[in-house]
Image 1 (cartoon, rainbow, N blue to C red):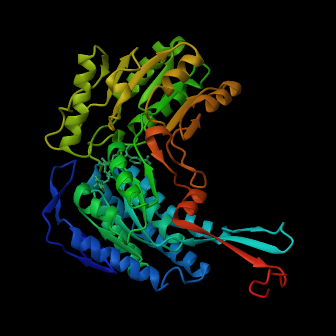
Image 2: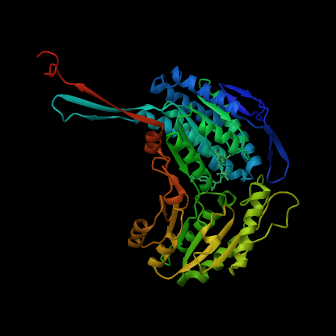
Image 3: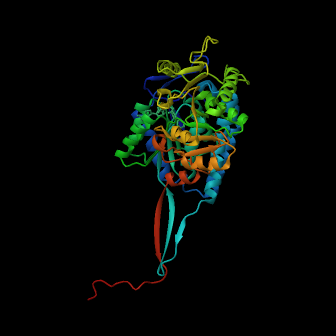
Length: 490
Ligand code: NAD
């Protein structure tokens, strides 16, 4: 089956007649597909299909064991298709194939297994303190979830949303990014190959302002789960709020990676490189502001730059590639404009800051490192979302926490120290939804992952997804025949 359909509705691929959206390989600049956009009509059909699948109970009416078995079967099918799925993801995003396979596609399968395990243990509550009554609190699926995903990790993030939504019995409609939809198209096809009932997972492809907006506003869509930029999140949350639809927002970041002089130096250098250059630098959780204690700054900067100079930049298909192209020509130009801004604001560019000259085709950049004393500089404030690290120096832990918190974002903080008391103080002081101490990018699915401040509203994780994708119902029963007040007997 070809994967350039516009929508996948009730188990069938559908081609729309909206304007064709080109899908480009960022490494070769080849056009991989031109997908006719799913317009309002297809969004409506997808929403109706999801509603019918929900209302007739073809999925949430199954026993938990049946749903667990299906989620695990989906995971197995994803694992079995790992080579094909990672090749598609790499072609569409420029993410090095080794990272796509080991991190993204492996995570996609894992997400389904995680939720299969979770639902087998989920429990309600009972309040039995009242002498005459017993009250049960249970959760039921909400209905139809609208899921909107970004381009930087389409399959892994899309799978997290789909798995979370359907595990608890909902139907869903996913809208991948128009820039990188192909992996999610394949994922939805694989989910059906595993045997999920038709209409439970549907897909619509197209631009945010057209397809995405229609999805958020569709009256049959009960919930919205969004991952993407903060500006987009604001618009989506307002539209959803107007209709009183619950929404979760996983948004941008400008995370501080704090390296104290008490750190294991080599680990901190390794962690700082991984934090900013993994996924071609395009990660919401990137450690893009590297805060280094002044006493070790010279040593750290020398070691960091030496390693940056040796990063293997190349085709995402080469096994040794550590840094591939960024996602699009527009995105490359946007990242480069930040290098210009940094120069204009008088910052030192210690490495990079230019398009890479070694490639005829592809949106390759030199990995960039800039140094400043000004936490208010534009490149310290705005999310660049590319292989662009900013180094800031600090003297005391108080300075470090003040600089780290001086941002409108609050997704993640990284801390490197072997001083246990300093680590404990850091986790207390840092204003972010996640704090990683002496480890980079450890995503514990059981725990919430969500941003503070403008990095998000709500979170993903076991309990958090259960809370979002289900609604509570309180049932109160009499424990014995009650002496009811008898009206109308006077
Ligand atoms: P984006 O906000 O431009 O787009 C994200 C998705 O929203 C796309 O599918 C897009 O088509 C859709 N969209 C755009 N406008 C819309 C509208 N008005 N209504 C409905 N849908 C609309 O983000 P992007 O450029 O694809 O991704 C990069 C951003 O995502 C970065 O800011 C990054 O930090 C963020 N991100 C956050 C997390 C997290 O977990 N916090 C994870 C990954 C990426």
